[in-house]
Image (cartoon, one colour):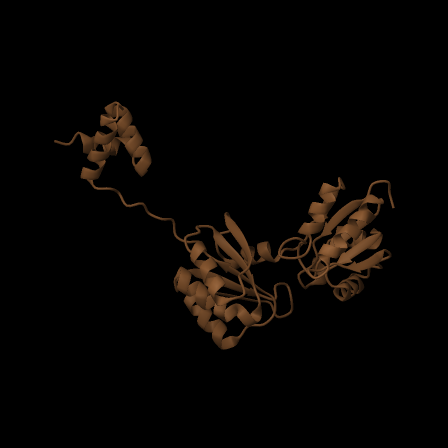
Length: 280
């Protein structure tokens, strides 16, 4: 225990213990308190890593995080080193953690991280889809109506999309994705990443939905879906361009400024609008 407590977020292996970092091992061995999403899985991980957890182990999961957060903040204020570990991946990413991080920061307690695996970036890397820009949507709504509404709102998103989904809902989710995004949208279903039965199925959404309905994939699933193709703006006809320039001239702009404004508004080259306006 030190004068100033510290919260350390631990990136846990998704399934293969060999992915654990040396720092994760060190923190597990030295932390005063280890808050685990599942204490049994933590015990198994520590055994696989040949690490003895000397500190107090407490459960910290969705059902008790509101009640347990103040207790952990009290421990941090008292100078204890508290480690937070989930069943796999990074805390706070669709897992418990955000509430405790926010409470620790509000209490003036240092928060740091021992980074490790993440199903989001792992699935992106192996998907074969663009990774330069992406957005993580977590779990889709449970009810079909709410899920379809969410997907309609995402249909025009141009960034690659990453979802988590439960095995018993994946076939329905993929069918709704194909309906909202189109059967031909590329996607990759990543199942049991880093584990013995790891599987990555890369197919268009329509084919992937049919495959999932037939094969009923099991295990932890991360779904990566290509973004929508960039929208191509339709060029207005010449009469529309002339009228737009004339309207701006009537409002007091010079022809030069009117042409510049119209070109910018329609995403056109100024020279092209100038040519249209001065055509005989």
